Length: 187
Image (tube, rainbow, N blue to C red; front, side, top):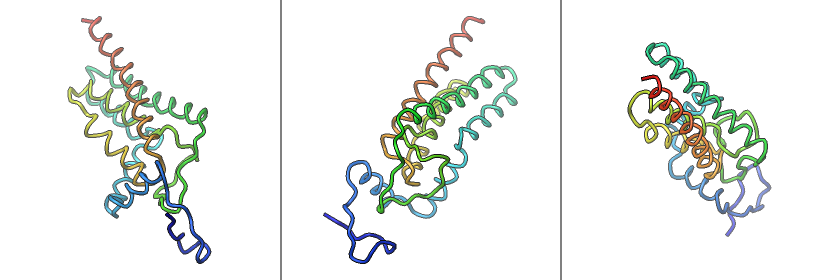
């Protein structure tokens, strides 16, 4: 089935309906992309850009928790490392960002590369690493909103955010185990 193109297209010109991941992405946007949700998604986007917000939180943790300063700094560096790993994968895979008239892009991006989502990667790494330092599982509170925000803003396919979360979880998990084993050997 076809739908009419937006007004900037030739009158009567039709485009195919989105399918697969584009259909899921367009469906998410239709379902929840209200002004307040888009505004919140943009805020998350700016916070997570280049992992800067998560890195800054790690520095705050190091400043406040002087007893575990080294662990906080290592975790913050791990977040940046996870972000760097996602950039390396992006450059190998070279998947282009979603592009279809049914998908609205709600934020600028530093590149046209999509897979994996660096925001999802660094957010998941931060959630895993900082969970070990605060003694609470932060993953359910931090990761889903960031993943959904990337879809709301139309800058990633669903598999981009899932792969980013998986990559961040692996990097964060490996580093968290190392931090935990170092702490045990010092006792």
